[in-house]
Image (tube, rainbow, N blue to C red):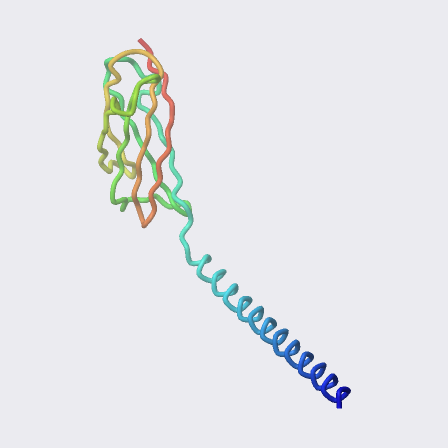
Length: 146
């Protein structure tokens, strides 16, 4: 009788192992099905916004009005429907409280604003763009001549 109980116990252990392994295999297949859906959703996401920042005139002079022009593209096409485009300006070596915010307007396919750099030196210009569900910001440096 002991032998029958032992064989029954072995059989029960094997059955539990088969059920557990089958359940794990089913979960793995399910994960792969979801993985394919994630790839489809990622393909629907739009390409990132790309920016080009230029200054006019190219040589920035202290005390003179300078146009900061921000061109925004996505998939090679100009973005003309941004919710908000602005930039902050501050001299090298100063704190964030000393930043000056400048709003822009859409002119000939680019967002632009004007600023007069008060004195010669190195400045930071950080742009902020909110467009098509995306927010971008980056900093460019400009050297202001006397």
